Length: 428
Image (tube, rainbow, N blue to C red):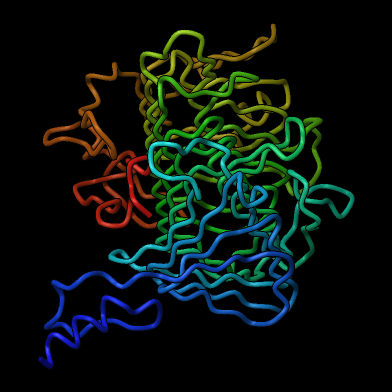
């Protein structure tokens, strides 16, 4: 009778109750539901026993901390006013999931009905530097400015977090990205974050100095990793995977897209972001009518650096676009070292710059191989198989963890346990 009463109590519980270990076969606890809207002005904790729905722009205001427990689910969608979570300058998000209990931001629609752009995404604005003369608003419509002089600014933690079906178009040609970072400082920790099926870019940086690790851009509509406005951070261990039937039909979907700013100026700080140990898997065989660009479109004055990186699946692996970026490649500030590509390396325009000669400079140790020669697995996360040429040949890069492999993975699958490569068919 005692055990029967306990079972009934577990079944009827709505929130804040969990059964003892001896009752693990009983009916799961039903989670409560709660809407989030407007401004969060006092320190707030989102609990794992509640499913939250973002309604419209939800702002974490200056001086306020939003803490999210491991395993919490936050939704947004058409029925909730295109919800978006915005961390303003001086605000903090403490979203530290675990490998076993990641924090999930996803669509409010049922499985089988979800699509890129169901909701907004996550926007973090900080006080680090950018190269714009004004105090800009983050793109996409939210009333959130970014920038300052504190390159060590701390906007909190995103760790073991998934962001799915974000990227709503709230203004023409100004969709919100899966994770948008405006002048986010190096005191912020971004590690083990997966953005899937986004309606725009997976990750975009507008200035800032943050140094993320373990990022996954999975089947996003536009670019995988986009850096602008003087982003100077370091990104290590990143994976990008295209969907051959999903691209930006208004433009072209790239792996890397990088510029200094919209006009290609020499404004300081220059975009000198550095990426190491990246695997970008393009569409390989694009579906009819899809518009894919290149593995790395380096343009408008960027000085991006790529190291220990694999780019495959695009006909154009790397394109250097514009005289200023060509100049940076020539003087050694735009770098591609220890890179393996399947595809061509080229440029735009009629200048004398020879992109292929630059790429094949002996000291850079770059190679061109067919996709089959890389030895990648055939399904996400495209781990290198035994004997893959990617498992060796990595070189140490100053400012990064030392590695002996090329691409995002060696023999350890850091994506295991917390990622989801089929969020369309997951019950949330």
